[in-house]
Amino acid sequence: MTDTPLLPFPSNFLWGTASSAYQIEGSPTADGKGPSIWDTFSHTPGKIERQETGDRAAEHYLRYQDDIRLMKEMGLNAYRFSIAWSRIFPQGNGSLNPAGLDFYDRLIDELLANGLAPVLTLFHWDLPQALQDQGGWPNRQTTDAFADYAAVIARRLGDRVAYWITHNEPWVAAMAGHFTGEHAPGIQDPFAALQSVHHLLLSHGKALQALRSELPAGKPIGITLNLSPVHPASNTPEDQAAAHLFDAVLNRSFLDPLLYGCYPQELLEALGSFFPPIEPDDLRLISAPLDFLGVNYYTRAVIHHDPQTPLIQASQVQPIGNEYSQMWEIYPAGLFELLLRLQRDYPPLPLFITENGVPVPDGVDADGRVRDERRIRYLHQHLVQLQRAIQQGVPVIGYLVWSLLDNFEWAYGYRMRFGLCYVDFETQQRILKDSGRWFAEIVRHNGVPPLPGAQGT
Ligand code: IFM
Image 1: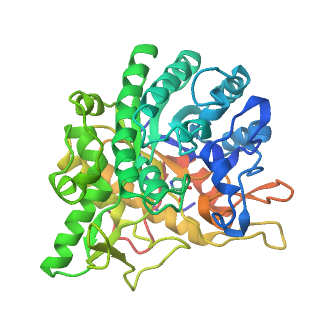
Image 2: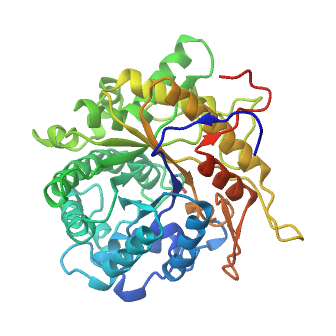
């Protein structure tokens, strides 16, 4: 790798990859699975680029053993996946589908047999369509269905799952699903968006309670948020105020209720009229102690005052001068900044980087190799920032790359490739990219080389 001494990571650090059910599994009706809102949405004309769907995706439902073998060969020790709720309850609640549960049972046994700690996410956006038909997340009753589903999963898989995550990026589920409508269920309504924010949080609180009572003592439970540092586009008071409000909307809207038991005042002032009724016990449930916080980091947000933006008069600008991926500005220092801010502003809590990765165009060369140098550079820069934060005392327990495989990137379909492993979606052949080999070396050494030209640390 290099002769320079490596920047070390803690012993027992979790190294792995992350995925989600709809993005990789395929087999949308196998073994009694019911439809989810993503099945419906992806089959609605005009919602997904090139009308692509997750019907086949990476066929992980059929090929999970091969995929686990790949991770074992890379020397990883953790794997994050999500459960498709409608495989377990095809109608969202009521009658259980044992064959759906059996799939995850087999998956977990296979992970354990290959030395990978299962990190299970209960909800990664694929709400059963039957629950959407009853109102979805804007309907408070969905919170009870989620807690019942969590209890069933805990009873069946609780002995073997190492880390539990209730929700993945509930902010995105609420906002992209109910405000901008770019994601399923494709609603554009601020009331539905803010109702979803509160009900997703409440469902987390209820599921946490259910998990605590069903799981063996000591099983770590957390939630995963998409978080980004928010910077003002300029020093003007208007831009600074806009960035401050945007931070309340993007980051503190979930962090504060979870970790302090209250919504940010700025958020309530700007958007409070769209919230559903908050019942007396809700914030107590939402802020019950967590064992870790999952952090998904991709980029920062640069914000300016924008009178045209409804409700918050703040919108994002694309700063010039930095490198961009196919989706976002590449801003590695933001990971360090974010982790230190979480340590500074919130009660002490282990942090777990549950996603970090990059969509950059790549492809198979004539000799069969995928030379994705830009992805290697992205991961390298972010791991150096992560190691710096750990050196400064931030308690980070693991790092998971998004993603093991190229997969269905929601409204973009298959155009965005995030994998350490290339997938030919016609033949379903997998090819480990150069980044996958590079990451395997990092894991093997439990350390990352300093960046070229760095003056030590
Ligand atoms: O693919 C998504 C994932 O589902 C949630 N976090 C961000 C990833 C990249 O956009």
